Length: 91
Image 1 (cartoon, one colour):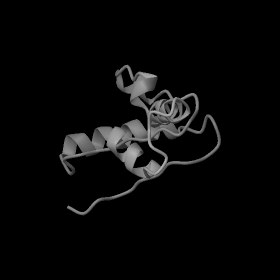
Image 2 (cartoon, rainbow, N blue to C red; image 1 turned 90 degrees about the horizontal axis):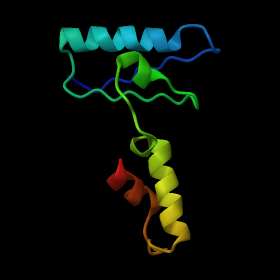
Image 3 (cartoon, rainbow, N blue to C red; image 1 turned 135 degrees about the vertical axis):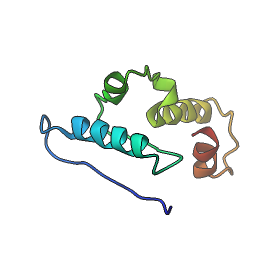
Image 4 (spheres, helix red, strand yellow; image 1 turned 180 degrees about the horizontal axis):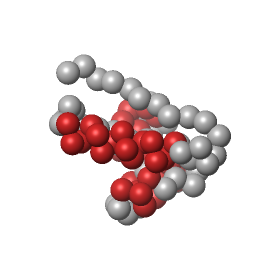
């Protein structure tokens, strides 16, 4: 089955997270996809709480970016390395 992108957006409190979890439950139950990536761009992300999984900041894209910035500041990464290559290897 070809990859699909489903996006939920809107103002706060309109049910985006609830809708996401219901859609995720449906997709898992119908076994339509082997791999599912869920991205919560909300700075106060709570998807982990809703699905019952503790998500450490270091496991998030923001956490990976913070680690990358720290490594660059400490000069642990050569300047000629493409930033996207590093991010892809970390995520």
